[in-house]
Image 1 (cartoon, rainbow, N blue to C red):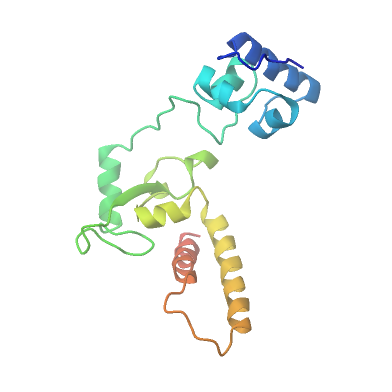
Image 2 (tube, one colour; image 1 turned 60 degrees about the vertical axis):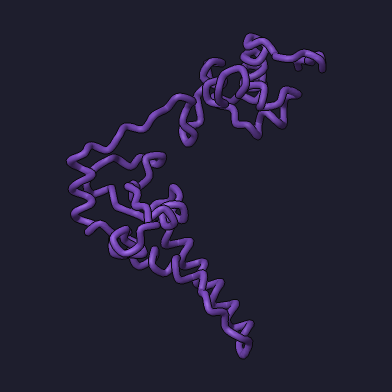
Length: 192
């Protein structure tokens, strides 16, 4: 294990790379997560980010396999071509595919192009894999696939039903948080 002098302002890159390689060798790993680093090293992950710009850049510099779920620093997703954006916008009728919000009726609505099957999970930028979502629905979807959304929605609805059974006779709330998930479930079922 490498011990660092506490007043050292910046740890040299060579030491950081050697530390990652040591952990990989000792633990017989081809990639190292931040959790693994915290468990087997005295060097904090901030040192790697400061020296290399990102965790993945440090892992790559050490000759290890990067975590593909996290894009390396400087990664830029390819822009969606204009003809494809126009086609998807027309197909989706200038509305969010989940809640049907439109900037025509509410100027605060911002529509975003989203991959139905996320790029991080192998989705492609094609007409069939893109849809329009408002920023609220897009944030709620995160990088889940339609099947994962269905599973979460079913679990959430089941928990809500259990909770309703427990609260029978109590005052009902005016807002039902399961409503948004019901819409996502219906949409996901249509897509399948």
